Amino acid sequence: MEWILNNLPRITDLTVAHLLLALPAVAAAFLIAVPVAWAANRVRPLREVLVSGTGLLYAIPSLPLFIVLPIILGTGVRDTFNVIVALTIFGLALMVRSAADALDSVDSGVRLASTAMGYSPAKRFFSVELPLAGPALLAGLRVVSVSTISLVSVSAVLGVQSLGSLFTDGFERGIVPSIAAGILLTAVLALLLDLLLIAAGRVLMPWSPGGGR
Amino acid sequence: MAIDFRNVTKTYPDGTAAVENFTLHVPSHTCTVLLGSSGCGKSTLLRMVNRMIDPSSGAVLIDDNDVATTEPVALRRRIGYVMQDSGLLPHRRVIDNIATVPRLTGASKADAHRRAQELMEIVGLDAALARRYPKQLSGGQQQRVGVARGLAADPNILLMDEPFGAVDPLVRVELQRELQRIQTDLRKTIIFVTHDIDEALTLGDQIVVLKKGGEVAQIGTPENIVEAPANDFVAQFLGLDSARRSLKAAPREGGGWLVSDGRGRPLGVVDSAPDQQHATD
Image (cartoon, rainbow over all chains, first blue to last red; front, side, top):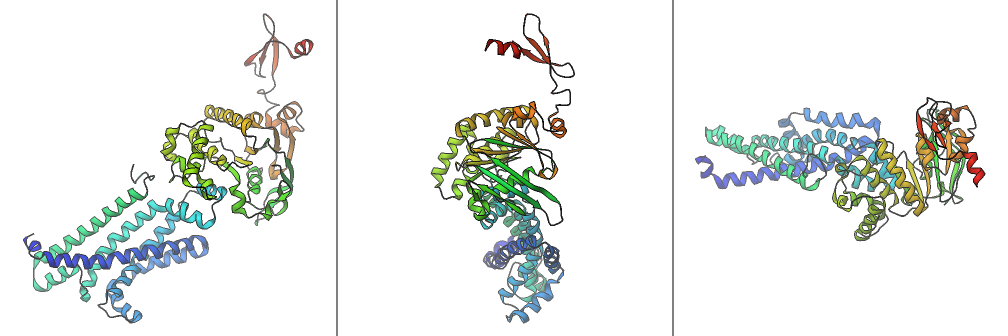
């Protein structure tokens, strides 16, 4: 604890750096996964290919991906963009399936009713199907968020600064509190972000049994 | 607005025919009931009117205009639709559900809500329910919201697909009565789909009894159909050959008649026999 207090400015910087890597990746994974999932559900023969295919991305070992990506992207190994792209790929692997299932779970009666009332297909997607898939999308997003926060730490091995750096530095220099703080703060950050997502769900989806009222 | 089905056929790619060569005139301002068991194509016929389903051949006309020439989304917005299990949007409050179609057609939120409040009163919903979500309402209340939503854009045509099928019998009777009351005031052209004979007899100005594949067994007023079923199928469907509807009248002590069904279960009394009524007319 004392170690944390003494190193507060550095820890704050690392937390911000950690979030700057994780948040864009989580957001990108979500924004890409939803249209991919939509397409997968639209073209049924494509569904398994897209859903299982993106799911397999998770099987890529993270460290090699961090190293191979710069070659493909033409960025440096320590470039944050490289890390964000890698994290986005892992996020997609989780998010596409849950988004496809979420969009698929919208009640067919409600779909039928909204068509019968005169929603155009696009309007129906954005004002009926997407909101109703919300709770299931949120569940998927929470998994992606937690997983991304913890994965960011791996990039510390490459020398990209994040809370993971507390762990690698502590390990190299034999400072146990630094290692402990790295692990602890990563977990706390993941938890805080999760709580934030739950709160956002309650505000955005007051109608959902799990969210609010 | 009158609706005409002209030699309508719907065949699915796998070869099954939901409806074959169906023709019907639905007069303006009346309620036509499509009556039949599941698989008779009654819902398919209903959905052809607002182009949820397009016929494989034949045409559906509204006031002599082929609906196929109208853009589906625009067409649907001017036809009310009420379905079983209400189909309410679970993420919208009651008031917003009712205001859906006016909002889609560009009414301001304030106007649409004002209209929705009027409709809540018309269908007998407490104004206090406006801010609730559909799941917080009883089944009967949800169906009322469904009816209000169907009426919100003041459509001339109302399509009702077993709207009261999922509520308990007492509430169903109450909802039927409300619909009759509303219809007396608003005089919409209604097509009402049901498999419930009593419901058909209660609501229909015209009843179309359907066999499998949309084959018409009989078209007539409720009186026509009960009085003179065209064939065994209709008689059987109505239960005319069962004890339930073969009524007997026996002279009652102190004048009048006691009416009972075929099993001898007393149903009620008639103060004077029909022929006596004629005599006093």
